[in-house]
Amino acid sequence: MKIMIATAALLLAGSSAALAQDAEAGEREFNKCKSCHMIVADDGTEIVKGGRTGPNLYGIIGRQAGTNEDFRYGDSLVAAGEAGLVWDEEHFVSYVQDPKAFLAEYLDDSGARSKMSFRLRKGMEDVYAYLVSVGPESGS
Image 1: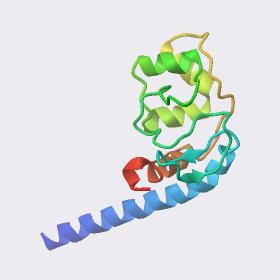
Image 2 (image 1 turned 90 degrees about the vertical axis):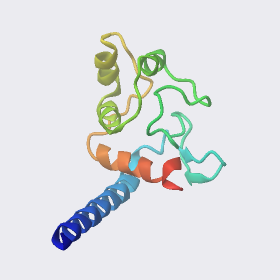
Image 3 (image 1 turned 45 degrees about the horizontal axis):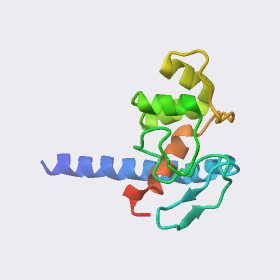
Image 4 (image 1 turned 180 degrees about the horizontal axis):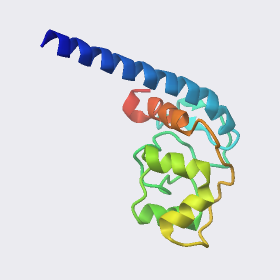
């Protein structure tokens, strides 16, 4: 029994360390995103100063797509949100790789468009981990 508990503790410690590394790598990778996006907490605390071309990404994880009241989203992203799109790891990673193709597939509409033209080719999972780490649930 003690061996099982010790093994479980090591596994948990290892996965926490991996998540911390991913979030750290994601913070560096987010530099590509901050030309368009900022991360500002609900109380106005500026986590990452960035552009205003894209929406504030604070609290995006777990949020329905296209619902930040302070940003005017494209019709396709709003439609995806209304169809049930919530930003979890799978959807976030797919979206940032190719926003237009993601929306076309998600909505089954080849005419779907995205205002986001940038494609993040690597580090998507790390950026996701970083956004989780600075989100409202993290205590940031």
